[in-house]
Length: 265
Image 1 (cartoon, rainbow, N blue to C red):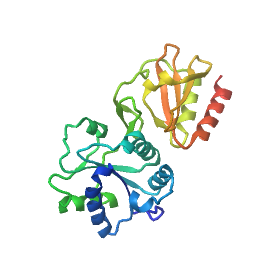
Image 2 (cartoon, one colour):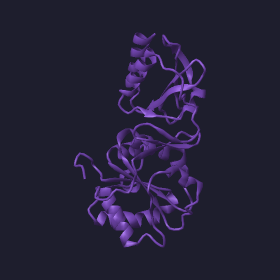
Image 3 (cartoon, rainbow, N blue to C red):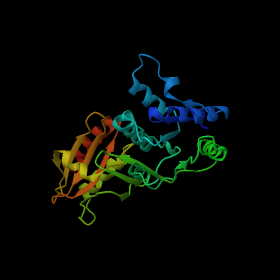
Image 4 (tube, rainbow, N blue to C red):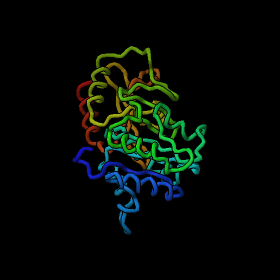
């Protein structure tokens, strides 16, 4: 593992699955792995959200456990979105773990299209699966494909590390001619650390900021509660040319927007 991390792996799970997760955690510990496990890392009086974010940043791998009850309320409303966004931006590997009894046709598993999951069929004591998990965490065996998942709350979609949209409703323009000012703006945005392609349909929530010399409109939106500063470049016909967001790096985006306004308008 990379010594600069405090933990080897972050555990995210529904509280109703804790007994099963604890059994797996015990095995991982016996193999010398350092775990971020909420009951051990979050103390009474601690700000839960802050501790979760710290744990994600301090781990190169995240295990996302899915049991028969699906995602827990906290996962659905906050932790899952945060985990996925941070993993995309910080290049943290997500390994979905399917606990015994999970229906492979469950709609929730559509979130992991393109990622190989590790499934426990009969029990969490399946030695072969446990050892495979240890190897995957250590990087000896790759379980996950080269994609990241983003859930923007308006339907799940998948993008690869090059930012190419694979699945989901997309209103990005494929054929609209792009002028030099827009090309320069896109280059500026793509150079922002942590910039991640987002769902183009979110442009409906964005606010108009200004126009570029070639007529492209610059729009922005900050997602309520969870945060995430979004930016959209839209053609005069309304088609989205560029769509992306940053999380915890809003200053860099604001600076890029100022540069675009200065150089491209």
